[in-house]
Image (cartoon, rainbow, N blue to C red; front, side, top):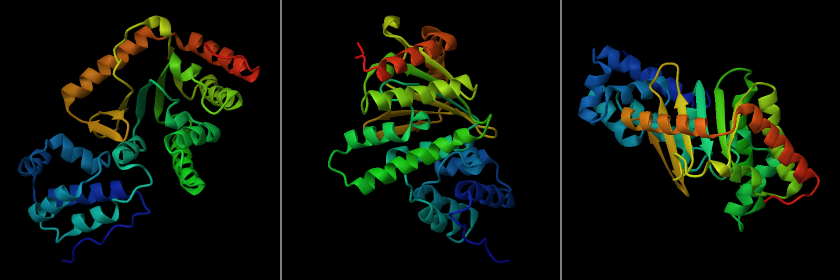
Length: 280
C-alpha cells in the first residue's frame, strides 16, 4: 500500500496533519499514552497534536516517523508547515487560538491583538520596530487583522477580555487612534460578541502582577495557557499549571469592574480622547 500523500499547507494544515497522526497511530494499535511514552510526552500532548491544537515540532516528527513507520511523512510536512506569518515565540499560540472554542485573556499593557484596530496595531508595531521598513510593518498589521477575523463568527470563540486600566489610559497613536480603538472594544461588547472587564488601578495588588495571561479551551483537547514576555512566550499544557492560571484569571474577574461598569468606563474614556482631554 502506498504511503500518505504530502499535505497541502493551504488547507487547514495542522488539522490534516493531526488526522494523519491519529490514523497512523491507530493503524499501529497504539493508545495516545503508548505513543507518547517513548517521546517523553503525555498522552494528552499526543491528543493535542491530533486535534490540531499543538504544532508538531520537527524532533517529534522524526521520532514519530520511526515509531509509526510512516517513511518520513511527518518530518517532511512538519518542515513544510514550519513557516508562519507570526513571530516564532507566538506562532504556536496563534495557531491554537484559531481553533479554540473559548479564549480568556488578561492584558496588562495593550488592547489584545484580536481586538485591535488597524491604526492601533500600526502604532504598536512601529513602537516595537522604529527602524523597520513600512512594508514589514504592513505585513505585521495584516497578520494581526487576519487573526481578528476569528470574531467574524457570531458566537465562537467565546472571548472574555480583562483589560488593565493602564491599557485604557496609555495613549497609543494619539487621541483619535485611542478613541477608535476603545470604541471598537466597546462596540463588540455592546453587540454581545465579547465580554470585557476593566481591572481598575484602585484594585491594587492582584493575581497577575507578573504580566498578561491567555487561557484557551478546545472542543476535543485539554485546555492550554500562554504567558508572554518580550520576544518570548510559552504555551503550557501541564494540568496543574493551567489550573493555577485559571484560578488567577478567576481572581482577576472578581477584582475587575463589572461588564456594565467597564463598558461605561470605556465609552467615557473614548469620549475624553475625542475631546482631547489628557488621561491621568
